Amino acid sequence: MSVVGCLSLTNAHSQDEFSSLDEYIKSYESIGSFSGNILVAKNGSIILNKSFGMADYGRSIPNATDTRFYLGSNSKIFTAVGILILEEKGLLKTDDFVSEYLTDFPNGNKITIHQILSHTSGLPHDLPIFSKEGSNPEIWSKFRSLAEQIDLLREVELAAEPGSKVIYSNNNYRLLAYIIENVTGKSFGDFLQKEIFDVCGMKETGHDNSAKAIPNLAIGYFPEGLTKLKVSFKVDWSNKIGHASVYSTTSDMFKFYESLFGEKLLSKRSLEKLCSPHALSNVGTYGYGLFVFPDIKVYGFNGRSPGFSSEVRYYDQANKYFIVVLSNNYSAPVLRIMNKVASLAFGTTYDDIKIGQPIQLEATAQDAFIGNYEGGADFVMPNAKLEVLRKDDYLVIVWKLGGGRESILIPQADGSFIDKTFWATVKFENNDSNHPSKIIYTTFGKQYEAQKMK
Image 1: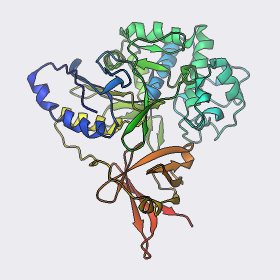
Image 2 (image 1 turned 135 degrees about the horizontal axis):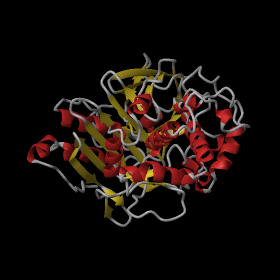
Image 3 (image 1 turned 30 degrees about the vertical axis):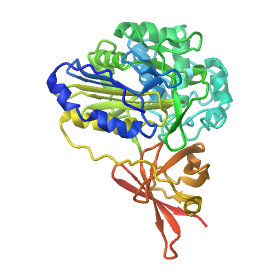
Image 4 (image 1 turned 180 degrees about the vertical axis):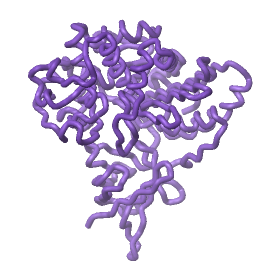
């Protein structure tokens, strides 16, 4: 796979800033791990808008700057902004209980809209039928109305008492979409179109209700083996309403964040509420629909849905930078690419993991690593149970507390592996008998250990 470039820069200085980006991206393209678009803006002007790889590998259609991608959880910001728009109109309050709008919703008299927005409602991560994403692709191909999904949610027990714990939950934003529909009498998609997309001039953005074909939409891909790709299974995006159903372009996302922080969508007071640190988790601090770093005034989020991944960041500083990475590859290292692009924009260094071409390991060598491993409370995913398996001619880690998600392990010449989903370094440490006894899992400079179980 080669880099396909569609470069748009405002001046020669900007080209110098990002001159090393192509070579960096090639290291991921060469192992089937990135295709997509990257945009950088500074103080309201786009200084980089570039495309890589293919929108459709089967028909050799390259990504272009107007290619559309599903945003995954970067859709949540639109739902959150929608709620605050309704609050400004006097149609609801974030301190209100759910029962004021959905009288028969279980525990609605204990759950507030604020708690739903900030992932402190106690609702579990997703509906049981979606708890193992990708394990049964047929589940995703069926249309389900929002009302049907809320009926399924009514049957789900709370995972924690409201307000007592942070649980990142797609159910929260599914429920918010339903509240929007009930309060306005409009479909969720029509509401977003009128109140947000039209206001921002986002002509390439929409909420997918699976009613019609979408022009310029990239095909989504999953990794297959160490370097190959396969087309994602079919998704009816009605199943993602409220939390991952929006598609967009890098340019339209720039328009949205410029409008948002330019106070064209929300008042200053509502914008401050959106960006306030409402809930601290082990992966970051949640505002409403985004991560917030208030001390340095940086805001953004990440997203991943079948065949797609995304990373967005807005720097509300003296120089206001906006960076977005959209990819039609589920396992794309969008956060690492974001960090690399930011380092180039700011003229700083970024010490990324070094990725070499996969080496070939004999089956007997792979078999030594096979087994069950368990992390402690301080593991990257607390108390995670992992299973290392051989699949065809390569190894995978199965994250049993992550819905059975598989991560392909890319063998490196130094004896380590690269986790192809989370882009961490994996090393197996031997005991005195020279047999693997633990996994050393290193991500963004921090090491975690998972012990091999007998």
